Image (cartoon, rainbow, N blue to C red; front, side, top):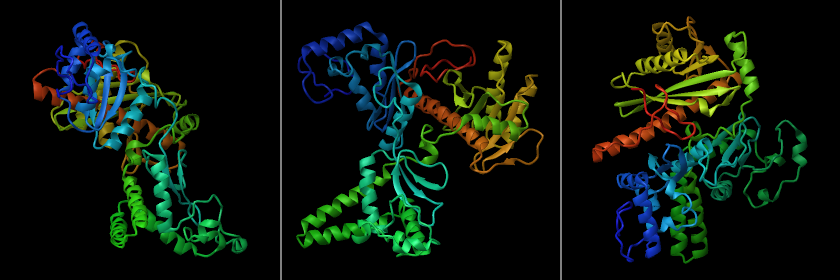
Length: 501
């Protein structure tokens, strides 16, 4: 069987990606694509050097716009299937694969990360040939309330942004709910919506539900367990979810073997299924990396009003830009600029840059370069500066941005930086940072902007990493370059432009 992307001969014995024989008609269609579309043929060659790892691939048309995003367990195999004969006739792909003129990929650490990354990119880019994942449907979370005397545990797609400990997002709601039932038998927590207060004596007359009768809940609704003992069980559950699951799984595997040796195959099968459900709890993203912005609602108007007050601005900051730096193995550094209008992402204002004048890892000089490039061009083309410019980092990063404006002889907008470790806000000429409460509307809006800038920078970083790997292996350029405005690299629409010369 040929490797994905190999040239097809004119034999009817050609095998497609599903293992079945390709028909002569399919072969002829693919050959017509190859002969009439240089970009398609080049993309087919490029796929041969994709890694055999999980990740996301991005199909582009002749103008560089992303037209399709997909995930893969094996990038080379999955992306290569689009260049087999069957894809030219497959009902899901036949109408648009002729538009393919280039392809890029992003390597992910796991299949789960690939799925979550695909979801995020489709929602951000809205490729015209992706039919699913464009809507507001989100992945589920496991939520443990923290503000109640007797915390509840539940599966939700609309988690609270305060008063709760969250795990996820999870890639399968069905598996998560099944695992929740297994965990409830072990840790006996409540999943009801009752507002139970330990100090209210009326609960001692409340009739517990069936879960108490079958010993899957300790019935705090009937005061059968103290607040301290119940919270101890919740802490054990959190330890399990935070990575302490192996001890329980080992015990369940031993019970399964024992049941099997006693020919109790029904119990052994049930334990096997429960073990698989608990193991699937690892198929989840990390809140800090894969949080879904559409899930955690941020009131933009309140955020803007709060920023005006906190920063002492004359007007609410209607246009806010955020800058982030990402590194590629210490050799390539990239920067992203995201733009928010009236507190919401404005994708046409997104830009990305490949840092050119800095060797190695030097965030300060990289920030100086990207600020200089961006705002010199804005000044030369008489474009308005943002009301607020936020740099990802601490006092050093802020000073680097400030120095860039000074060296370009430009008056900066309101300039701040946000340090992630303690979420401190730094201002020029102010020795001490501003520390806001975690629930501050101003801080939450700044965090949203910072996280979006980081995500956009990482997206570009992955694309460059793939190009660098491709060039090292083949000695060929890793991708097409299309002209653009000097200094800018568009990314919101999926179009990638050349870096500044």
